[in-house]
Image (cartoon, rainbow, N blue to C red; front, top):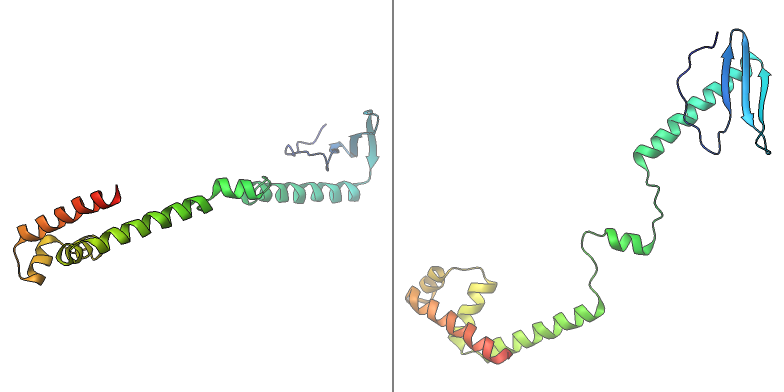
Length: 156
């Protein structure tokens, strides 16, 4: 009677099959011409090959769980990046836009420039700026709106 053994995964590097029928231990495989060959082997060799199969299966499962099978190329790493690197053209364009913005901010009247910087870059509210400068909330609000209008005109 054929002994029940767990199904083992085969790959091109482990193409043989082990079978135990009563007291016979059989190693079967296909030769180079594709002909099925069956060889009777002793118990010790059978157990050694069986252990190797189990170890090999354990390794293959480990590879499946923990390693990638994809080829890591510069293109695949680029496509998988969380934040794509900025191109030279984009960096130059961004720097030119920042430079134009800074130049436009420098052209603003002192009060508008100071309030705009405190609001947008300093993170202060209109009320905090008004308290700091000792003026009304509405004055700060109007000043920042005027600064934005002037910036739009400068940047056209």
